[in-house]
Length: 182
Length: 194
Image (tube, rainbow over all chains, first blue to last red):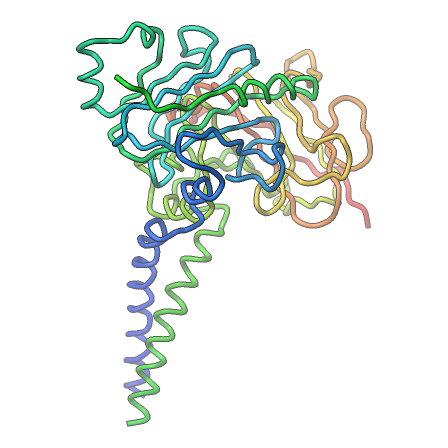
């Protein structure tokens, strides 16, 4: 009887340890996280639609049905990445995520210098280099300093009603995500 | 000998079964650590940030969520009506009240995975604040159900569990200090199909 009790207590204790271990290992080993899903859908530096509108199941879930979204993966070890999109939509917002899907920085169209989306994501070290000699065409861009290498850039745009669908689709299709030389 | 082996196996089975099962349960529960409740609405303002708790981090990794940033917006989810009953797709509801400050908001009826429910019609199970009719005091009354209703109508269809997802975009309440005195609309059940 005593040994059974002993085994039960050990089992509960072990359950606690396993609980904590599994909890911390899930983010490390998940093959269903946003990065992995995007990697299955497209290459680095390629804007990919996240909503179901583009055909097939949505790549990343929990996108508002009244929103269209697109994302691209980047690796800052290759250089800085520039994301651009033309304006003319009622609302857009953008977020930078790290490899494990944590939101590092976000902004929306009211934070931008103009209605256009023009953002550069770079590491603090690259920022120092770029500041030294800021290229002419980067003058109006929003600089997002991110202490990461791999990451995801997401653009979301509001679709108030059906008549906006083609316009918002075009906004996302014309958005570009490119490795920038400096 | 056999007794020792079986007791060891019991301990191991308990540890792995309970340990794994409890994580699975905790990750599937809609409530959880870091939740902020306002009336029937629950939000996770910390989810998807570097400072979130391990449960939120595991949930983000497992479900492939890319959570809205602070400058983007904040989502609230409701799974029960004012009387504490779970929301059902076969029931009609009325969502009434005022909304906190935001550039705009969207409201949609969702299934278990928090994706919008399929109505089988051209009309989506979603509404947004630019298209709703308001009362003189700026509050909004939304009728939810599968029968057309005057005023603001949120179409639903089918049977089973339902959630309401209310998202505010470009809003000061996304910074946690603003969440203390926010009032959200009430969810009242109007009736159910037998």
